[in-house]
Length: 505
Ligand code: ADP
Image (cartoon, rainbow, N blue to C red; front, side, top):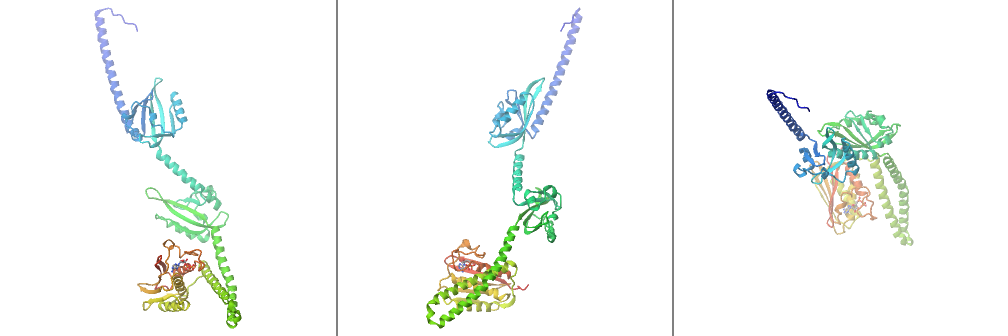
């Protein structure tokens, strides 16, 4: 710059005065700018401090010069612990090397970089996943520092993982799974649903659930409308395929609620039980016809055996055959009992079992049953304790069958000198019958099973078929009563059954 030439002293004074005032103005201006910059800096700092995303700033040597409180909270480190350090102290082994290479490549080209693939590790070693943005701050072509913004997506990623896990279960499930809107329109539809019902997802979404209901099951739709409480329902029923075929399904429907408890529709599972139903049907029919078919020849064999027994009695020369003939007789009785049991079960299952209800004095029935038992078995003493008037509406033949079965079991499982006690008590609105023995007792772990079909404590036992208690339970259930047992191994068992006093339907 060329200095101006001043000719006189006054000119020089004039010049000095002028430049002093210019300098003052300049300083003034700089001061204002500085105050402005300072207040902007304070503003920026406030913004960074208030930001919920974690922010870190490094100089160009990648040394930390600033972290905001959100960063301290996310990582567990305080600023004083990390100041001047490299941010790679957060690096975990979960982030691929490739990510860091890409990151540096972009920053060197003065470009920003964003990724979701970074999993970092906090001070306590706990990992977190972040949505990471890094960019250089550039002034007049020169990088001043680098800024890192981290948005914590750990929970979101976890939820996405759980969601994709459930999606995969639904997708690969063999059961039909779909959901419905509160208006019972299809919301989604899994591949198993498509396989069973023949509708594609595109065809069914938005359609009404009624599409799957055969006419005779349409009234079940009402069941769903009632289901807005927090319970689920489970039932077996029939549904209709796209091809018009009926399938048997086990249905579970649960209402869906959001976090606030608002009702949002239904989740539905259908399990195809068509094959099981067919097998059950076949079993029922087979059981019934096989039992009937066996009954006739056995009745004939019993008759023929009776003829042989009579012949032996009359003719001494056949005496050695007596043992064999009585063995045949007892085996035929065993077969007869099995067939009787199977016929009962087939009647229960086909709904052909009916009670012939009558008003009966149960005390008399018990006394008569015990009398018959005493004729059959002379080795055990059966003590009877009865309250005076015990009139009840029952099917006497069926209740006698229950009593006989329980007394025979008590005899079978007790030593001869041990008594058996039969008691009948009149309670408020029911009568209770107890059959007590002092025999071997029943192992506690089998007590829940002994009323089940074909269950035997000793499976190799040739004496019985595990049907007796199951039949007793079904008969008592049909009378709307209850049957149960208490037992102690080595001390004996007590079987109880109760019958309500008002049974007539
Ligand atoms: P089963 O005709 O084979 O005896 P039940 O259904 O009558 O079949 O009985 C089921 C099982 O319960 C039997 O295997 C038997 O061991 C056990 N049980 C029944 N009654 C008694 C009892 N009074 N004492 C001990 N065990 C018993």
